[in-house]
Image (cartoon, rainbow, N blue to C red; front, side):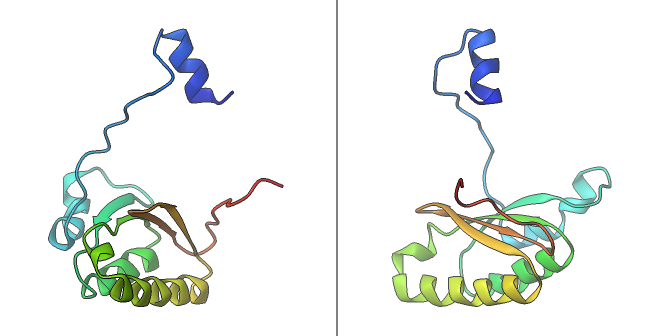
Length: 122
């Protein structure tokens, strides 16, 4: 049993916990995030991928040691484009010693250098 499940039972919550992470940000909002929050070493930034032009922003954020929670729902309507973008991002994360993993059909997690995602239990 995970920590969240134990806490949920302690507080009398059901099995399902609705965690509102808010809306995904567009490219302009991501660039302004530092002004909205107090300074920290890095951020976890939710980004909605709307076109392949957002790739440059994602790469910049990863280079700046930020973790990206990428919503690809909009681009998933074009499977060929989505595959090209994901392959591009896979190559980039490999080059910077980062990591990438699909969370579900619409979400991808990207991490910067020296941050790895555990994908399977051994």
